[in-house]
Image 1: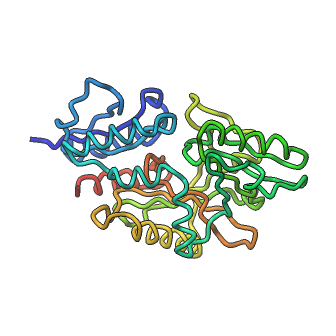
Image 2: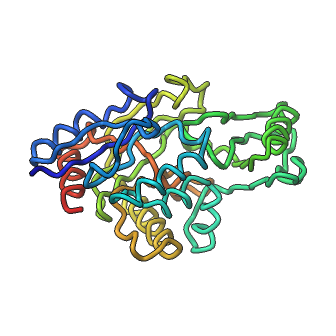
Image 3: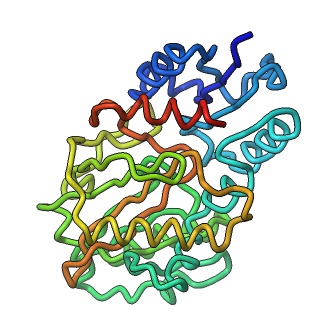
Length: 295
């Protein structure tokens, strides 16, 4: 009997996940019965799958606790990847603190907890250029760049998130990204697979797709030795704080940008539902399918 694998998406993400058809084909070619399944479809019998793989659940950030409760239910009846403990830790961007404590270079980030004053978080001068977003977010939703003369708007954004009981985060805009773009490093089963370049979303205004994510310009990239070192360090730091049984992670993505000193730093470590851009690297879909088959 073929093993059954669920690749989990969101209802609104159907047809938008460019990885999905390639990964389904690669899994089916291996003799696995793979299907695309919506995470909050109440009719799904999750125990009927041998493995459930979180992929494009891109609406989770609007109801994180509901999503994590779903993950707990699934993990109780079958194998879930990435595991619940990983989803819980990584779905709140305060995980960046753990990376920084471990010595991993990150984009400087100030978090404003609910109840704190907005102004205490942001050394916002009139010459600011910062990104403001919620700590629980995805796809650049509720994320904005504020430049010179927009200090009050930046503070208002932080204050609104705080008033809604959400944690805000403020990061100085890294201007080298406009030319260099972001580098995303993809890892399957703990092994480096490939890298891609993402164009700078906030060099202009982001264009949202389906209310889920900002449109991105993607192309293949050869990662530098320095980028590989930082990516590997980020995964080692995550492994130090996550339960040992979660290693190696089935999939991981490390997003890097050039920092002010020119060296790469972590913008985000994506362990929940990242696009993995298998169309942009020969054999990438097969490598992820092989990792899934090994599970």
